[in-house]
Length: 88
Image 1 (cartoon, rainbow, N blue to C red):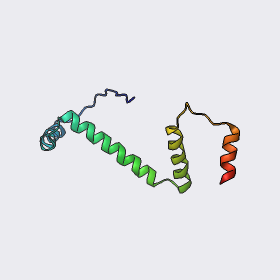
Image 2 (image 1 turned 45 degrees about the vertical axis):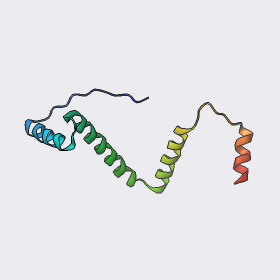
Image 3 (image 1 turned 135 degrees about the vertical axis):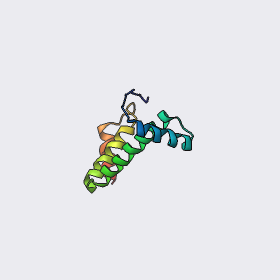
Image 4 (image 1 turned 90 degrees about the vertical axis):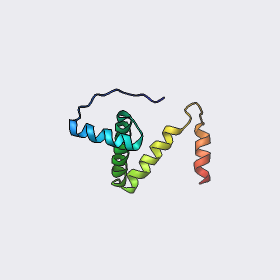
């Protein structure tokens, strides 16, 4: 479930004018445009950070992401794990 947090930010008047113009071109509200900009900024920063990782760190991160997607209600016995490991 996605949670939203409401934060207030102060923006100078010249930026507000620019945001209003851009929102008109994008056919979005200023609020929606700012939300979209923040999401894009965070995504770009995450990508920059990812590109700086070593190959080992990338593998570790990939494993962590896969583990987070695992079904926590499904279990395997220790014997099952070792059988799978012996097959490889």
